[in-house]
Image (cartoon, rainbow, N blue to C red):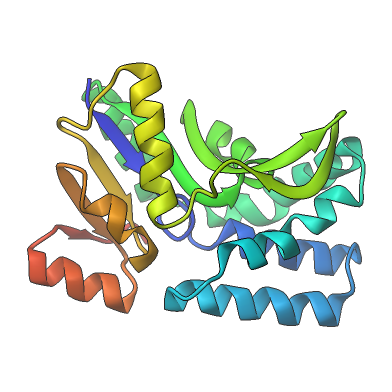
Length: 217
């Protein structure tokens, strides 16, 4: 039973759920629209460039979670799924997931975006295992802090390796699908790396190394 591992944003989705959640909060008036959008866009650009300070970003991105009850956050997230995530769904991505299911592979999403945002998306995609950045929760309320190693760049490899140890699994026969140069570390350790609508830098690496490049759009 091989692992078929997928990045989420701009891979299985036609867009970035983390950035889109920030935009959704702006439209809802939950945050100061001008200030928050400016920072959200700046962090997203740094991410795409491969220059994001993940802890600085998480201090920004997790703050709204700490300012509202989980009940209110869940209400907003249901709206977010309906209004924002559903239009990002890619039929070709759904088909690819199904191909791996039919091959008997175990599906996993591994994402830098926090679990609050991404867990319902994984459920919607019927992917049972997700490794994501973990926002800290104390007494049923988010604190605005991150717990554990952020699931970003080499942190994805660290978190995946821990999961493999806990599950007594290996990467034999494994696939990893991603669009981003930020995922190069993980692409290098699986048996079958696949670039999905890759950014410019990953596209260059994939071509140099003769990795498959696919289009799910």
